[in-house]
Image 1 (cartoon, one colour):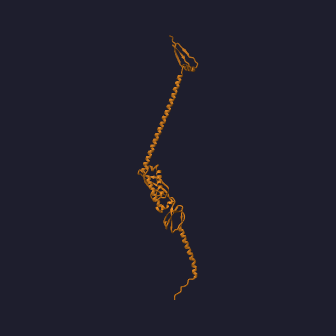
Image 2 (spheres, rainbow, N blue to C red; image 1 turned 90 degrees about the vertical axis):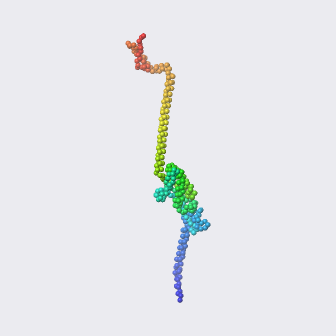
Image 3 (spheres, rainbow, N blue to C red; image 1 turned 180 degrees about the vertical axis):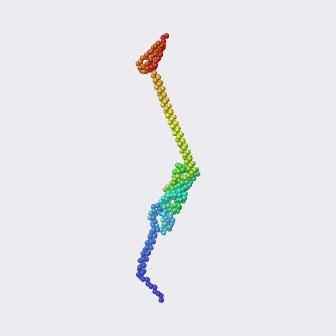
Length: 321
């Protein structure tokens, strides 16, 4: 005879039903949370969100819907890729303590075929509206963009502009003009590609061969010595001219005084008449009459008043014929 299976107690089935219900509800919740987590994206302030359409006639990267903030998408048909919007800064230097451990400095030739070397600091941003094109053209890795395309643009601009200057100019006053021209060329090319240049500058001094530096310094020293010598010549000439001017002034003064004195003497001589001379003698006479001393000799002495040989004895001849 066939054995009849034992019936399952009804009470046990009733106990299992609530557990199944809660388990199913938990599964549903997990699925919903998973879908929502994959549907909501947060695009930070330093990023750009790029939309990729996976299905439909507009499959591929969206050229217009650059998003930010909270974004709700269908994860089945749409994907969001974060692209950096913050400024990217990098220093290409020879030193191992900055940037890469290797030598990333720029080497270029001048118009007089002197090889110079310099460090550059550069900063840029991706223009939001150009992000889709940049992503398609260069890919998602911004660091790769910095060290390939950006660096090549900077290097080419520096090389091109340096060829219009001599080493002496770039190591002297011409450096600022050269730097401005290089930056202008870099900005022009990168702007057309959707990048915004924020900073371009050389770090420290440009490096040149020691022989070139010594030659430039020697030339500068010679020029300074020549300028100093010229200044001394100019100073000596000025001092000599001052002496000549002073001598001319003194001679002119003497001549003027002599002419004035001669004119005065002329006027005085013209004014001397016999009456004026007699009057002057009278003015100078002290009122004493002449005295005469005689003797047994052949003459006598006359004492003249002051002004007419006063104090002198005049011998007069008294001999009778």
